[in-house]
Amino acid sequence: MTPTPETRSPLTAAESGDGRSGEPETARPAALVLDRASVAYGEVPVLEELHGTVYEGEAVALIGPNGAGKSTLIKALLGLVPVVRGRIEVLGAAPAQARRDVAYVPQADTLDPDFPVSVEQVVMMGRYRRIGWLRRPSAADRAEVAAALERVGLAGRARDRFGTLSGGQRQRVLLARAIAARPRLLLLDEPFNGVDAVSQHAILEAMNGLKAQGASVVVSTHDLAVAHLACDEVCLLNRHQFGFGPTEATLTPERLRATYGGHALELRGDRVIVTQT
Amino acid sequence: MSWLDSTVHRALVEAAMVGALGGVVGVFVIVRRLPFFTMALTHATFPGIVVAALLGLNLYLGGGLFGVLVVLAVVAFSRVRGQDFTSATGIALSGGFALGVVLVSSQDGFSKDLTAYTVGDVLAVSTGDLAITAGVALAVVLVLALVGKELLLAAFDPTGASALGLPTALLDFALLVLIEVTVVAVVPALGAILAVALLVGPAATARLLSDRLAVLFPVAAAIGVLCALAGVWVSSQWNIAAGASIALLVGLVFGLAFLGSAVRGRAARARAAGPAALPEEARA
Image (cartoon, rainbow over all chains, first blue to last red; front, side, top):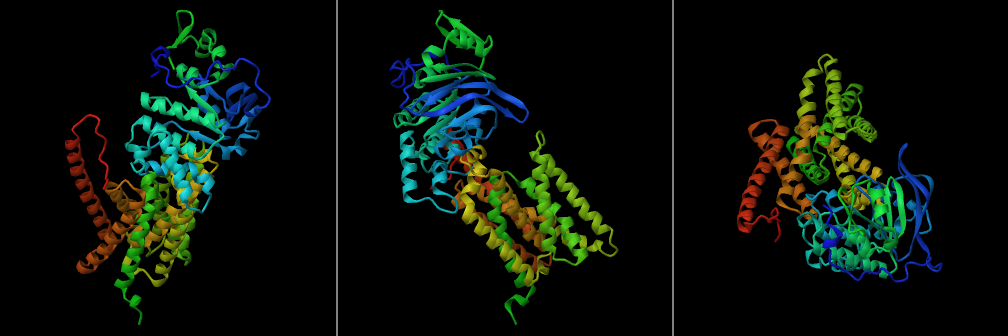
């Protein structure tokens, strides 16, 4: 499932090393604040003691094995899973209050491929929040949908049924749906799982485009190469936080080994392959 | 003398309305994969109808109120962690129907009416019944026009809908109530056992013919209307049960569409002749 980092060619202009090492500038407001936060379904805590800050225009990768709580953290950022201790602040508000400016991209394979809905209908769902109840999409909404599809390279597939597209293309459609919502914070749940190289490239491009416009990105992934390429920060997770900080400095072999609990294999002293995800 | 004074005329109007209603609401039943729940609802409203008959109340009101109770019970049960919606539905189906039979059988001289409740009698509809069906149809069209896009999103991507801040639990409940009132309107014509035919068959047939939601609604409604009208006509020509005739025609049309799409699918696969060939797409 997880390609090794070595096999990837650089896909986009990675923005690492551009002064990320210093302290965050106070001019940029925080998009996301985790303040000793614990998240729980009912009584059982899923994630404990999360602590860190992501600033506007930055991307953070959530890295950890399956069942580590990455999806749960994303749901907590949407206000769908409660914070039982500490505090999570999204765009300066409680998570549920920030939803208007947050877009969520689920894993494409969690959606029913038989559902009779076209690509453009799926992308239009991203506009619902702005269209509001009881109203129909306007010409401006349609233009936003077309522009969003253009950005993920699927302008020609607008009228096709969603389920007839490949897994990677469906993931791009869901990303276009998020783009059409014009979010200030984008949450992506494992967008690179089972995705072809073309789609991966398109997704990374679109992520970087949103960042350039000042939006922040949270992306959960198994793919350390993605973290290196597109993310300023990483958050290492496995029920607890095993590190949160600038990508290069945080993705150390020791931390990865601790996060993956022995399923990490070291190569030549500076590279790590995760053997089980 | 009104045109509606004729039993057959009333039956035709009722059949056309329940056919259209069943077809339109059926699209949601199909895309949400709720045929089994619908089946359960038709059976579970049965005791409400019997109680209403015993108390001399309106049968629709009795069936409708009882149906809402069943919807609430099923939703509440399946929201409890670890409980399965299908199990709750199965229990509601058998339990509701059994309660209806018990109530009917406890009444002397009441048991011969059991047939009317279970397989319906579209030829017995009154003008009052017609008004109620028309009211339900109007309400359903109104709800779909107002919150159709939200119901669609909640059906396709529940988590995405919650992430947008939509009240998904409320939307789910609204959809189940929509199905429930449709069931209540259809049951007098087709009966508790056969009503599910109109709520599943036309939409499932339309789904075989098209991938587009905008097409599914009118096509399902048209199939429902045609089957219902033809069923009443067949029944009046040969003096056979109307509800069963409608249900049989629905099944026949579905069978033909299924054969047609299977043949088309084979042809499309033969044309594509590659391992990457996806299921055929009905594109103009």
